Structures are given as C-alpha cells and as structure tokens.
Image (cartoon, rainbow, N blue to C red; front, side, top):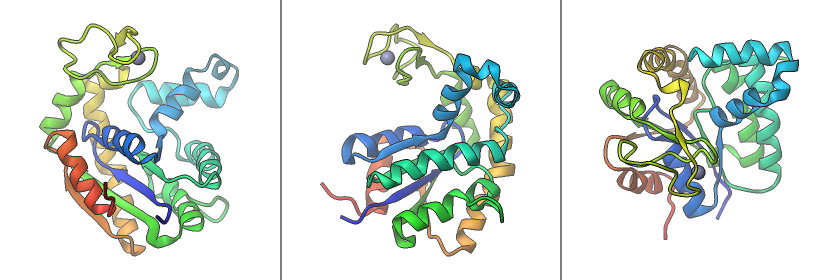
Length: 228
Ligand SMILES: [Zn+2]
C-alpha cells in the first residue's frame, strides 16, 4: 500500500482524536495530535525558562490558538522526522490556520511538506461534522487520564484510567466557557483552511461525526480505501 497522510478537520468534540487513534491502532498510522505535542511542550518545566513558551502557555490556557509561527516551526520539525521514517501519518487538529497549512515565502507550510513527502494524491482530507450542541456536551463531560492522556469512556461513572488505572482529570480546555471560545476559533480560523485546501485541488471527504466512533470509523476507512 502507498503511504498515506491523512488530515482530519472538525470542531472540538467531533471525535478527531478518536478517529486518529483508531487509525493508529488498526493500521499503524502515527497519530500526530498537535494539541498534545503542544500541551506537552508547554507543560515541560523547562518552558518556564523560555519567554516565548511562557507567552504560548498563557494563550493555551485561555483556549486561544497558539501563535501560528511558533506552531509551524514546532510541528514542521516533528512531521518531517516521522515522514522520513516511512510511516503513514494522521494529523488531527494540526492545520488550524492558512499560514500553518501553507506557510509563506520564508517557511514551508505543513501541506506542501506532506505533499513533498507523500505525494499529492496520498494526502487525504477528512472533515468530521457535528452540531455545536454535541460538541459542547461531549467536551464538558470529558475526563482524561493524568498519566497517559487516554480519554475515559462513560466519564461520569469512571473512577480511574482503563489503561493504567491513573487518576482522571478535567482539562482546562474543556470548561464550557473555554469550549465556546474554541468553537468560535475553529470557525473563524480553521474554516478558511478547508476552503484553501479545496482551492489547491484537495478533495475533502465530508463525514458525519455524530454516530458512535466505530461507525464513523467505517466511513473513514471507506474514504481512505482501507480494507481488513
Ligand atoms: Zn492512563
């Protein structure tokens, strides 16, 4: 099979991370959840020494997207390395601004990088659609393992992580008032990226993200022509 680079778009709570994780588990895609890479870089105690990272952490905690120039520099390095290792890759929530996607004269964007590494016809774009109401509901109830980052299913009943038994925590990102900011940010900043991708000739596969994740996954597999 030709190596693929899959880009998943969708509002917070649309199940991007879950679909990416399913691709990783079932077909050994490397799941680049830029949010988690960024969160981990900002939580690193060494971040305190860098004024740039301190500034980014403040934005992050308020639910505002990180600075595009910092994200592009940071993610370009990570994605290059993984592409060179010859793996399929899935990006969930990485291309959040037109600049991150397409760059400028000084810096190559993440889309041209993927095209250069995987070939244009192997870069597949998926958009998961869910209503705002579902987005809010799914996010406010969400608990994450504080050790391994796994999301707890049936969070209301869960006491500990099903993988490592670690304590569960709420993310600062998932407070209702922060989710509303994130939904607005998604619409204002990410939507133009999808438009730009279409303009560059990428086909965007529209998928309904409302059903149970394994059912959504059937549609994702079909879009990627994955079998087995
Ligand atoms: Zn855990």
